Length: 273
Image (cartoon, rainbow, N blue to C red; front, side, top):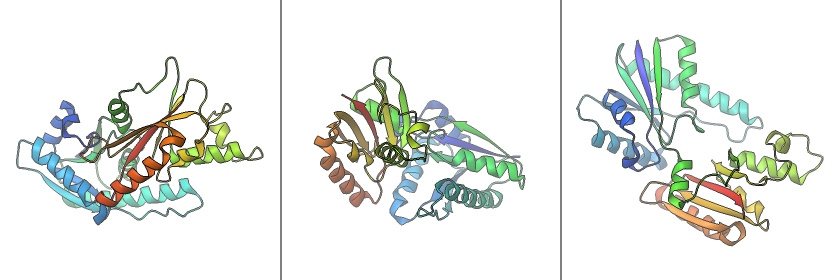
């Protein structure tokens, strides 16, 4: 039976690797990397550097798997993601069949933690359910960008006695649209439990996967933002303050990092002052 390890590697700083993650890397022989195009080639290089630094044997190699194209213009977001994930599963499955022998251990090095806004567990589940190959997998947790953001800003994630919600830029925009339209029937605000507004009293909201800086719509509401980009790397950028006071700085920094690196991964926390 083939075996796969889904290893959370933190958000860029090799010192964030857990002992468990390092042991898992040393138990692996084939590291599969989902290749996302030339502009993100550095992400593959960073994984290779981690292997060079952390693996104490020479019996390992990297196999790149071309990622599937995702229809970002589709009206049905969930259906589009499911099609994309299924296509990714087919490609990874074929790579495992070709590159990983029976009884060998392969791995995927995943930014942050495999449990938080990452599709890989679902992809492996789909491969296992198809039963084209006998495959088992194990999840190795890692430090998330959410934890790294709080540590970098030296803040707790939650206010005293308050709740913490983690969402996406797309969901935040849907909630704001629902609140702005009392006749809306899309269920956005109700589904998010936001009868008191985007931020309920004592609540903190962490937003991920937001390429549109959706927080801009919260200007003038006395909301604080703690923003971080490319956390844990030499290009880490941190900005905090009242939304309307720092929006332009955040947009400039985000654009500058993307222009220089070809990619940017940012996360932010919102809290009512």
